[in-house]
Image (cartoon, rainbow over all chains, first blue to last red; front, side, top):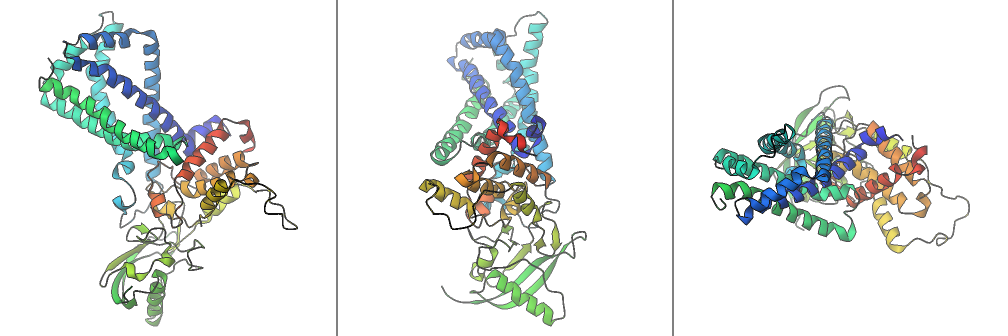
Length: 222
Length: 258
């Protein structure tokens, strides 16, 4: 039993999806906490302070490399699972059981994940990439608060962000519980609480994220 | 329950052999009693086809008591039909209305090639079981039932997992055509008992590897298997299987695994 086998076996793949997924869930929590500082409505003072810490602290920066590594692993294995699993049934059913036996979002993790990936490319390109580029080329950190305020005056951008948050929410409804199920923890008395916490997390975090562009667009915060 | 007769239109999958392409054939059956089982309705259809000089529909069946795991039909998109925790042979015609059209398909999965019509080759399941190896059960004189103490609730859970009849409805229902529910039930029922414990690490590794080799899909925790299982096997077994696999993966005990 080699590590390569563990990496490629069906259970090995889902353990990777689960562990990287849990790490990404933790990231969402931190990202949401830091960005929610815009709601102090203090002209971005507290937010900029937090963003400065996140952008310059050595521990955070090293963790960031890990974050990208895990994100890429999650995407690669997710897409592999999606493609391989599609090939396991060559003749499709004439009548589908549809929602009678399973939830649509559980069957659509590949599509939901791809939507989030497309959103992520736009999102990273708009904020993270220019900021890090400016930092590494010696021009210092950018005014992220000002960039957000400007970007979210455009209704198209706001709609894309809200759509991204909705995709994330449905992805999480399945993903949160599934991560614990895969690690063998979603059993007996824990099953119910993991399901409930997962649904609450899937609603609250994407909702806070979605409120950010909306708050700028509607001038709730200046 | 009120008895009634019905006339039905059946769209049944006909396929000559593994290599040939299949298609749907439409049949009409008359005066089907609501008290018949689904397979008895197929017997009526086949008698009718034989009388007409046509080829009957091939389908798997054996005990017709819901315990052997041979019957295997996807009825209107549902493995073993829409009744919960019921095999096709225990599905009764009172589940249908007069004049209804019923679509009947075989289990569809690359690891279950169609042999003929509704009969599929499920020997991949046998090979997964074989990959699990043996359990040490003493033969000879009957051993005292309480010679090995087993906690009551563990015995009950192991029994619930052992209820799996290996029919393959989980594979048929899974959008990924994964055999994980079957595999997890088999791994669970042995892992939870002291008789199965000595070889548990090699067993889980070898059985998962064999499942992947047979061309089943990967489990993504969708849960359709649990909804369709005629024996009510819970996906908690899959959680347990994952835990067994994780334990074996990080432990030297799995070095004997193939």
